[in-house]
Image (cartoon, rainbow over all chains, first blue to last red; front, side, top):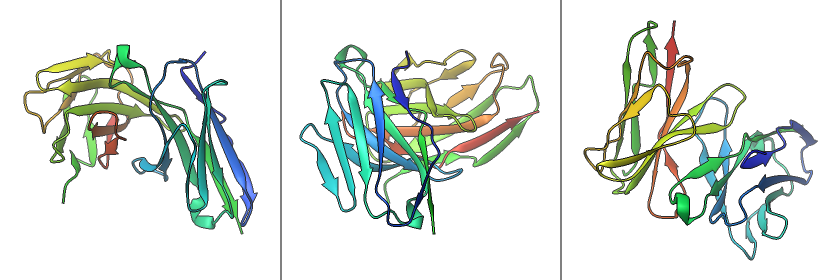
Amino acid sequence: RKEVEQDPGPFNVPEGATVAFNCTYSNSASQSFFWYRQDCRKEPKLLMSVYSSGNEDGRFTAQLNRASQYISLLIRDSKLSDSATYLCVVNLPSSNTGKLIFGQGTTLQVKP
Amino acid sequence: DGGITQSPKYLFRKEGQNVTLSCEQNLNHDAMYWYRQDPGQGLRLIYYSQIVNDFQKGDIAEGYSVSREKKESFPLTVTSAQKNPTAFYLCASRERTSPLHFGNGTRLTVT
């Protein structure tokens, strides 16, 4: 089993739709969690950190479910500009302090 | 402006040659990382360093080497032992458990 897994998609949705991505992780002691956005042939950029209580930033909501070992990203009212690949990142526990593992990414295409 | 600078943006080499990718940061971050990305794939960790003069192998360290002689610099050498070196290489840094900051990346093509 991979340490961090995402459904690669692509998710094709119309403008205005709500879309959700999940990311599962294998190590129950994992610490920090993040969502990044990556545009084609560019470096990843931080979208948001994921906090235990869940957090929201405008149209984006991130949640952590430690019991089931997954994090989620919800995008409401999708825009054409949301089309990108979304990467989840997991910080492994203190025995591997500093080691961050990326999922393979989920591709989102928002259509007019 | 604080940030991470990778150079060059594009690099072409002949098979059998070693090549060194530069990564410099002025964010005063302790930890620095090298990732490799292949088309349609996620990022895979090559090496990381949490402090000067110390570094650890990531998941795909074979055929690569690094050094961390200065806090702001973490160069990556792709050796001739790396079987499939053509890829997009990303350098990143961070402070403690904060998110990663990435450089713009270097696209290496080996023919």
